[in-house]
Amino acid sequence: MKIKELYSRLDGLIPPSYSCDWDNDGLMLCPDGDREAKKILFTLDVTAEAADIAIKGGYELIVSHHPMIFNPLHSLEDRMIIALASAGVSVFSFHTRLDAIDGGVNTVLAEKCGAKVTDTKADGFLGKIGEYGAPLSPSELAEKVKASLGSEKVTFVSAGDGRYSKLASPAGGEKSAVKRVAFLGGAGDYEEAEAALKAGCDALVTGDIGYNAMIDLARAGMTVVAAGHYETENPVLSMLMKTVGELTDAELKRFDCKMIKTV
Figure 1 (cartoon, rainbow, N blue to C red):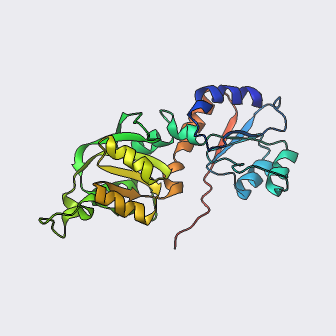
Figure 2: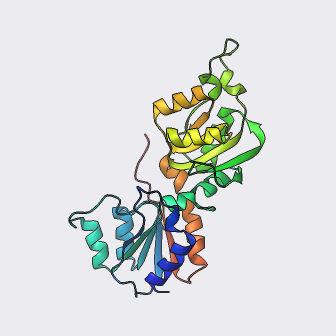
Figure 3: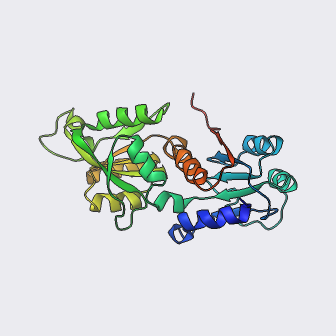
């Protein structure tokens, strides 16, 4: 399948109408749209190593989640982009539209963490809402998320520790039952979490979120689990590969591009 044809098909399945206004995703680079996409590399980020693999391996296309080009370019001096263009490698990036669609980043995240997705749309919330069959304590939720995603480190705050009560005990956080959970891969923020609270969620599972936001949300009655930006988004590559694999018989390869390390 030609690169321009494949992009058109994916653009229909992952529509740009779902992208946030501030986002820049879609067709990042296309030296030759008529070139056949015989080998396709999938990665969360178009890193230098990913570009090297694509060029040396003779790949015609890279499909990523995070946009290769996010901020406006006023001149083209990026050696990696120039090298990709010179090698005839195209790049597609599906960012916030992939977060928002049913079956995308946040659906995959919820299901990987063992929740059943119940609400695919909540007013003002980009993520997905899922439920567990039996209530979990905040620490049980954190442990489940950590094990499910293979995160090296998970931080969490319990609503039970944040809400003031004369009857609160030191173990108050463990008494805050969690059943209805909002899942938001990548970067969480207070506004998104507030929307999840209004939708009746007990907890938010996200990638990373600020310290003050976590404290404020606990005071507002929400347990928050931060499991890592990369860890909460990288699972979507399986969905992307499956989607592309149903459209073409090209050779598909996955590159797990984790650059940020924990010590």
